[in-house]
Image 1: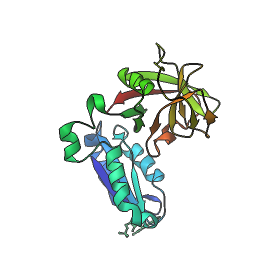
Image 2: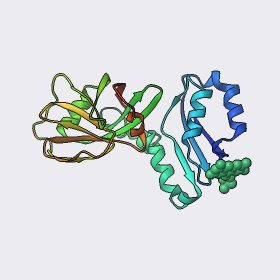
Image 3: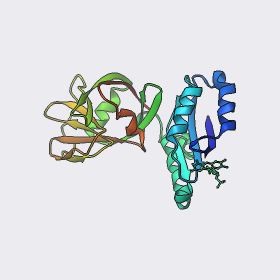
Length: 219
Ligand SMILES: Cc1cc2nc3c(=O)[nH]c(=O)nc-3n(C[C@H](O)[C@H](O)[C@H](O)COP(=O)(O)O)c2cc1C
């Protein structure tokens, strides 16, 4: 479901809050894509409000449009729909965006579902073949969430080296761990194989202290 609303006084417009309050039961378990417009205020307060009003709804990537981003509306809406996997009918009909050929994954952390786009290389393909996976990731240096695929991922023939930046999903070859970069950028390393990248602002879901559990599945 798509739910759109304007931001008033920094919050979700009051009539929409009333609407969600009245229908929270029906929204339980539903995947909801929120989009909002405002002059300049951010969307995060209203997303928290929706989490409070509809605790059992599953919130996906949001879209926030402001006067300042008016000129990019066309691309941003299309990009957002692509992120959500709501492609055009052609994509759905020929199946190129779905199933075994898709390089898109969903990552569920608590109630939030974020997405990532994987690389088309040997290591990323091996990782995709292991999905779905439920994993707990340890925090590493306040910058990465890591886990160790078992058995180790295939690396022969995969391109080596990446300047890992926030949002990147990489394999650190010497240790065999997958790292989700959520803190600062990691700098260039020859020991990295780039596996993919978290879409949009989804990396925020990893920006918490300590371990996190996630479910990873193909779209
Ligand atoms: C009562 C009211 C309160 C508003 N409060 C905010 C606000 O706190 N922050 C903001 O960026 N925009 C605010 N706006 C602007 C609305 O978000 C904006 O009108 C809405 O997104 C729709 O855009 P439009 O008026 O250009 O159609 C407010 C608008 C109204 C009517």
